[in-house]
Image (cartoon, rainbow, N blue to C red):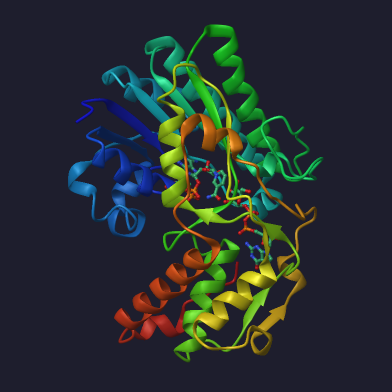
Amino acid sequence: MSGKKVLITGITGQDGSYLAEHLLGLGYEVHGLVRRVALENPKGRFVRLAHLLDKLILHPASLESYPSIFSVISRHGFDECYHLAAQSFVAESFADGFSTMNTNINGTHYMLAALREIRPDCRFYFAGSSEMFGKVREMPQRETTPFHPRSPYGISKVAGFDLTRNYREAYGMYCVSGMLFNHESPRRGFEFVTRKITSTVARIKLGLASELRIGNLEAKRDWGHAADYVRAMHLMLQQAEPDDYVVATGETHSVREFCERAFSEVKLNYQDYVVVDELYYRPAEVDLLIGDATKARTVLGWQPRYTFETLVTEMVQSDLEALHAMSESPSLQDTPFRY
Ligand code: NAP
Ligand code: GDD
C-alpha cells in the first residue's frame, strides 16, 4: 500500500474515473475536486464513479476560484496532484473560446500557484494533448515536435503546457505534462466521435435510430484506451526527474474506418447508415494525428494493452449491453445525439 494522498481534478470525467480506480488499487488515499453542482446531483454527475463513491473523498471547489482551490489544498497534505479538469470538447471551444480559455488556462495557473504556495513538494501532472500539435509539422509527433494548435482548446493546452514547464524551471517543482493522444472507452462522453458512433450503432442495431449524422469522415486519429493511458500518467509522477511524455499507440485510423469497424461489429454496413452533415465540420481541423511514444515505452516502461480492434469491440458491446438493460425505458426513444 502506498499510503500517499492524491488529489484529482476532473475526477468525474472519463480519465478521472479510470485514474481513481487505478490509484485506489495501488493503495492511495484518493481525493477529488468536484463542482458544487455535482454534489447536488450525484446520480447525474457521478455516473462514472458510482462504483467507487464510498472509497473517495470529494471536495467542492471551482476551477474559476483561486480561494476555493487554495482552501482544499491547504487542508490536506497531498503527495501527488493530477490536474485533469478542463473544458475538453474541441468543437465547443470554437463555440465558446472565452470559457474554454478561462477554465483551462486560469484553472491550471490557479492549481500551480496554490501548490507552490502551500505544498511545493506535491508532484503535479498536467493533462496536455496531441491537439497542441494541431497542423502537424512532422510525422509521427513526438516530444520535440513544434506546436501549431488549431482551436481555442488546443491553444489553451499549449498555455497549460508552458505554465507547467515554467513552474518546473522557475521554482524547481516536480511538474510534468502528458502529451496524450486521443483515448476512448465505454465511459467516453457522448459528444466525442467514437462514443457518438458506438452509441448510435447500438441504437440502430436495436431499432432505436435509423442513421448516424457525422462530420469529417477523413480525419485521422491515434486512438488508444483510457485505462491504458492513466497508467502512463501515474508512471510520469514516479520518476527521479520530472519530464514530459507523448502517450500514443503509434497507429492512426480515420473516422470512416472507425465507423466501418463499429458497424461491422453488429454485422451492418456503415455506408447504409452514415450521413455526412456539415453541421459537424469545424472551422479549422486537425487532419491527422499519429504519436511516437518511444520515450514513454523506454523510460517509463509503459505498454498499452488494448488494440484499435479491442477498443472498438469493447465500446460497441458496452453500448449494446447498456441499451438492452434500459430497453424498457420509454425515454430512451427520445434520447438526442445531436453533438
Ligand atoms: P472529460 O471526460 O470531458 O472530463 C472533464 C472533467 O473536467 C470532468 O470531470 C468535468 O467535471 C471537469 N470540468 C470541466 N469544466 C470544469 C470546470 N469549469 N470546473 C471544474 N471542473 C471542470 O475529459 P477526459 O477525456 O477525462 O480528459 C481529461 C483531461 O485530459 C482533460 O483535461 C482533457 O482536455 C485532457 N485530454 C483528454 C484526451 C482524451 O482523448 N480523452 C486526450 C488528451 C488530453 P464535470 O463532470 O462537473 O463536468
Ligand atoms: N465530435 C465529433 N462529432 N467529431 C467528429 C464528428 C462528429 O460528428 N464527425 C467527424 N468528427 C471528427 C472531428 O472533426 C475530429 O477530427 C475527430 O472526429 C475527433 O473528434 P473528437 O472525438 O471530438 O475528438 P478530438 O480529436 O477533437 O479531441 C479529443 O482528443 C484530443 C486529443 O487529441 C478530446 O478528447 C480532446 O480533449 C483531446 O485533447
